[in-house]
Amino acid sequence: MEINLGIVWQIALLVLGGLVTWAVQRVFDRQARLVTYYGHTSIHHVSTDKPITVHTHSLVIRNTGRAAATNVRVSHRINPLNVYVDPPCNYRREPVPNSGDDIVFDTLVPGQLLAISYLYYPPVIFSQFGHAVRSDQGFAKPVSVIAQQQVGRRTSVFLGILVIVGAITTLYFAWYGGMILARQLALV
Image (cartoon, rainbow, N blue to C red; front, side):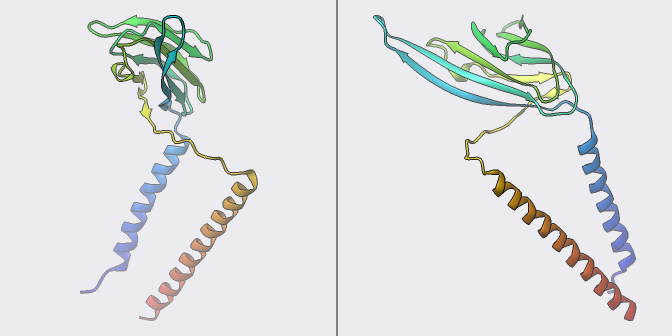
């Protein structure tokens, strides 16, 4: 069975064209993209004349897209009483029937980050809040955050140079291999 290389090249170019189109669209598309993660969750035992227990957690929302996110809503299953938004900005609370409140922000500009801190007392616990973040552009993507040590500037530059050299080397060998293959096919 003989393989028609013309058809293989056409299929490869179609796949490559689709990938390039997807990548270009992804880079230049002006959309709002919300990501959310938990800054902390904690329990504090306050020692006073009458000891009390206080629970806290924070929810961080960031617009990583290239367009403003509008009508950003943070939904809750219970009604949070003590809420602080940092940096301070305008928001409103809208009650949801048979549930808690929605905290509504009119817009989040590209790159804007908001931290919402909650303070509450037992028997309420963190898992009862059930945060859901959405906007007119869609749901926020929850991300896991892992604390890690940041590398220095010199190390970052060195690794960047290694990546560029590796990419150039890979492209060169791919081109060189293609030239050898083309010569072999021309001889057949």
